[in-house]
Length: 227
Image (cartoon, rainbow, N blue to C red; front, side, top):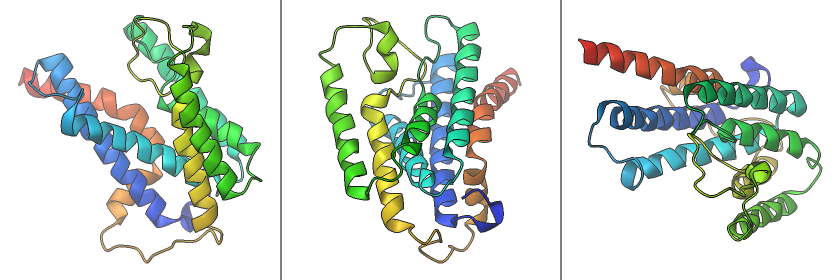
């Protein structure tokens, strides 16, 4: 919810867990890519930790979309930050820059959800299923660069972060369905866990942490390795 003093603590807590998983995943990526550590993030534990973090963000974005009243503004802000990351990563590497990453996905999905908020949970869940079916269909589609947001990619496509609407917006729709079922009264479902506050605080500021964590990680690793 938009009022910081009237938030649903378990949503912030789960988002904080997702942030922690994401930071550790990107730490592994940085250690492997920049310093040659023998760590594998393309499969195994770290791969699934990274994907779990992303899926948690998507589901929670869907749940939160049922609670926010200013969805268009919220979606536009997230999308704008996604575009800023596109610009920054293009300057870093024009071959692998972020073209439609998780912020683009969440921003566009939240904006689109604004227009279907009146749909019942079952219909939202079925729309989510259709997104996954659409994702399978894009595998057979001809490569069209302009349709990258839908999951239709040219040959030899690479990107630092890529989460197209098909199939990934399906998780956001499933989150919206859950939000409509679980949070009809817009209040926490369970009593706060002891000691939840630090992790919940991370969840309350997840966008800011997402934007700054990589520069901080890279600077910290650089200093430690110089020492």
